Amino acid sequence: MANTVFITGIHTGAGKTLVAASLTLLTNGTYWKPIQTGHEQDRDDSLVKQWLEDTQCRIHPTEYCFSLPASPNIAAAAESAEILPEKINVPNNQYQTLIIEGAGGFLVPLNQTTLYGDWIASLKIPVIIVINSYLGCINHTLLTIEVVKNRISTPIELIFCGDFQPEVIQTISHFAKLPVIGQIPFLENPTPQTVVKNNWLQIPTFLSPKNPINLLT
Image (cartoon, rainbow, N blue to C red; front, side):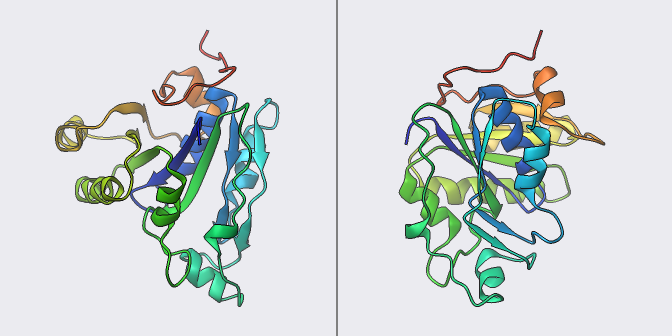
């Protein structure tokens, strides 16, 4: 699956949605969040639609959407439903970059037998890990990296999202030994346009967008 990337985070609320929307804008691509939980409180694809409303970027509809803000398997069971990864239809992205945003972390369960990371591994696509700043983020980041490496053989890159002490970034970078393609500071009112204009992200090396947007001048 060329020109496709999966965005995961070291925990819920790490900044996946902002990163995914910003990369969609930067590559003039397509955004897709196949599984959404807690939609009555906050729906990520609606926020991304609002952010990218006046752009040429596309947003594909969510396949599974549940009310309960919980792990996908628990949220689905609460509505007497089951997520079937083999029946999730990945959008055709022959002509555009496809940015897939996960739900929660890499190992959240989709059902009783499949973790989110298992499904992503079957797609054979690169993974970007979003790292948020808090006490414990070094351990959570290195754990996530180790798990992702054990499940995929495709490229992995990192993005820092929030205000970090330089020593934290240096420590993670030293042990991770993975490319860092962005550092987004804490924003009171974040938007992808702000991220792109300030050149806080670079296009991942494994993506080849047909018509990358230019908001940097």
